[in-house]
Structures are given as C-alpha cells and as structure tokens.
Length: 466
Image (cartoon, rainbow, N blue to C red; front, top):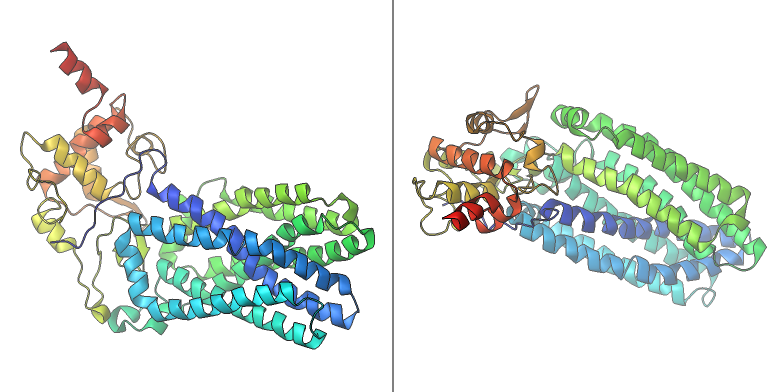
C-alpha cells in the first residue's frame, strides 16, 4: 500500500488557496513582529544616545499594538497554516517535521523569549534604567532573528535540500543550510523592515504632539527606505541562488504581472516613506492601514505565490510530490520512491482509502474510478471545477479529445529538462479512466456537481428524461 491519506477537496477556491490566504496574512503579522524587534533595539539605542524619550514612548505604544496585531492574530493564523497544510498535504508536512523537529523545538524556545520580551518592553518602558531597557530590546531582537533563521531554513528545504548529499546522509544540517538560505533570510529581513515602517505608521498616526510625531515618522521612514532598497538588492541575490530547474520554472510559469506588482509595491513604499519623512502631518492611522493593505496585495501575496510556484512539482525537499506521492529515493532516511509501485499496480489497488468497488477499473465504474484518481492525483495542484487555482479548463480546452488528454497525462509537462508536471505513472486503464473523467468535467455544465457527487447536469437531465 502507498502511504497516502484522504484528499481534502475544497470545491470553491481549492485547498492551495486556503493555505495561501492564511499564510499570506500570517506573513504580514510575523514580518511586522521580527521587523519591529529590530526597530525597537535601534530606537532604544537612539533614545539613550540622543536623549529622545519619545522613542521609548513609541516603543511602548507600538508594542501594545503588536501584542494584538502580531502575537494574537499571528498566533491564530500560525496554527491555521499547520492545520490547513496538514489537511492538504500531510506527508509533505510530515517530511518537514521529521527532518526539523528539534530545530522547530528550538524555534519555539526563541519564540517564547520573544513573547516575554515584547511584554517586558511594553510594561517596563521608562520604569527601568535605560541600560537595562537597551539589553531587553537587544534580547528581543536577537530572539526574533533566531526564529526567522529557523523558519527560513525550513522554507529553503521545501524548495531544495541545502546540500545534494542530504539524500544520502539525511543530515539535518545538510538539509538546512543551502546556497539560498541566507539570501532568502536577508531578503525577508529587509522586507520585514519595510512592513514594520508601514505598520508602525498605524500607531505613529495617532500621536498628537507634532514634534514627537515628526521624529517618530522620520525614524520609521528611514527604516522603511533601508528595508525597501535592501530587500530589492537581496531579492536579486536570492534569484541568483536558485537551482537551474527552479529558475527555469520561475521564468516560464510565474504570472506576467509578477514583476509589475513587485515593482509597484516597492515603488509605492518608497514614495510613501519619502512623504512620511517630508510631511509627517499627512500620516494618519487610516493612511498607514491602506498602505499596509497595498503592500499585502501587491507585495506579499505575489511573493508567497511565486515561492509556491517555483518549487513545483515538489512540496518538500525534492522528494515529496504535491499530491503526496514519494517521487525519489532518500537512502539517508530509508525512504523509497513509490513511483514503481504506482506504475506496476496502479493507484486504485494501492491507495489505503480507495472506496470499496473501485479497486480496479471496470466498464461500470470507469467514471467513478476516474473521479477518485483525479481527486487523489490532481486536486492538490488543480481545481477540478472552474474556479480556484489552476482550473482544468485552463489546461485543456473543452474540445480536447479524451485521447489527447490521456496522451498528455502520460507525457507530463516539461520546460527544457525540468518537469513542471511529471508524467502520471499509472497503468493504461487508470490513465484512460482519469482522462475520461476530465473530458466529461470539461464539457459538463456543472463540473462541481460532477466532482462532488459523481453526477452532473447532463446526466441528471438524461435520467429525468427516462
């Protein structure tokens, strides 16, 4: 038997978009948190060096805001990612946990220090010596950087193991440290400062004293400009560290609007920060909130989408496919590829959750068997309805014949030598049943009903006529 789990099918937007929506919102909260930790350490030092007590007041106010914005909402959306990702691809998430369980435990230790740190900075502002407060802000910043580094190492592994020898050794350090680990870390770090500068404006916009507001606004603008410029530079560094396969996928599969959206997000951020520095009176909480949404839509969402696209067809470490099938041997972990078993015996006979009566393809169950195969093999990357992520009707035209669909499924989709969608290693009868189902779905007036119930409007009208 294959070690597969049931498929989570969400007919509206698809499981991938559910994860993406939760993750993008979480990234906003988490990035604001880490960026603010660095901001607080810098402001605390400047407050002492230049005798600017308004910075300490701002740290307390911004910290109170972060307790809800980052540490409550972020702590809700974080488990939301875990929950949705576990449903969508349990084996992919299992691979990450089995590789990085102790690193993740370490990250949680630093995260606890981070939470305690923000409480101390909020409630001890101007109540302890400035020297003690500076030490607290430094500890807060370092713990935030530690959480960032661990998470980025895991994210880098999701694209590509740090060292190719990891497949033979299974070493956690070889999985963690790779050519793009630090490039991705610094890219995120700088863009975190950009987000911090924008989100901080929500708090700074409520400051009544004009001189205090101007001082804080200019400090935020410095952080934001440094973050925007540094983020662009590190992003090009990150692109240069991508494996050739991932770079080719990025070149051929990223949406045409991606460069425009990223450029617009950075350009608008720079304009926003320059205005904030030149005319602090224009800064209001409402303006900063709108700017935050703009960055979320134009910057964070495309960036997270791009990261997901370039690692296809894998979801973890170049050995777990997006549909949960193990696609290559990992001797270091004692893992064997499941492709030979899938090609020899098929999915229906080896999937633990195949419904009774579908263990083999028969003339009576061909459509239902094709439906089950589509849900198991295709639904993690493609919407089987006409909405959601990569709908099938954008892959195949309605007039595409069943034979052409079957041929395509057996050949896969290549860019150069890179398999963006590898061939389905299924026996001929299962691939034919899948092609028949997809062909019917493409020509169905209600493909959602066909996927959910196994029948569509065309079938229902024929039954009614009988």
